[in-house]
Image (cartoon, rainbow, N blue to C red; front, top):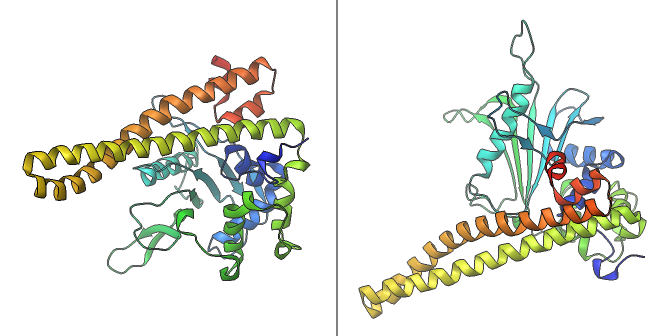
Length: 327
């Protein structure tokens, strides 16, 4: 029996929810539809093969990269699809680093002419990137000549979707991609599938996302993933609040030193700016790294004690197989 407090449909911004809708064998047609709507490619994707989400660098000291979804189409084009919830200062650097693993992986033994197949990094972000101050929610990056503005290399592609900037309502949706984004944004608010989706491939996504259609094991894995997501949001909100408080305190201190009137005017401004930045950076880093990591480990241990399959533990917690086995 489904817990009514969970709603009718899963939250697609949880690890379990995102992979259920786009990262499972049964959801391949949905991912193909989403990618074809998103990517400006001449020949549409027909089929996909999911690859190992864990890639290793060429050297042992290289950091291991784990992607949410990693797949390859029938033309050997490779795709990384990442769902990122928390703001990261160097997220685009991280995206480039991840893409480099796929470039290195194309190297062939013996004689090789260095021809590469296209790589696409797709980031679905639950925040805004500082490098894109405009109001556009969709960004597509390639190597471009800064003088002619012409694309000089089309095989390394970075696509970012800033969900925080996607504010369109149903009557404003202009294309099928926006219907997908509207589905992702509003899914948890629906009690039933709106009739506008009937007959569309997104109708299949509603069926996959419906809690009542899931097995007991999937519902249990989702509930754990949802708990982790809610704890994550709580830690993030707490860190932001602490940053604001620190900023106010620092601003008042500077204000007293420089004079009441001038100090309050300048101190509050500087205090908020410095404090928010410092508080968020330190608070989020410590809070997420310590609080969330401990919670993930606790959840994994509890699941292991209850003999939950290793694959479900990985989906529910985001931990790797090796990390779970070491517990």
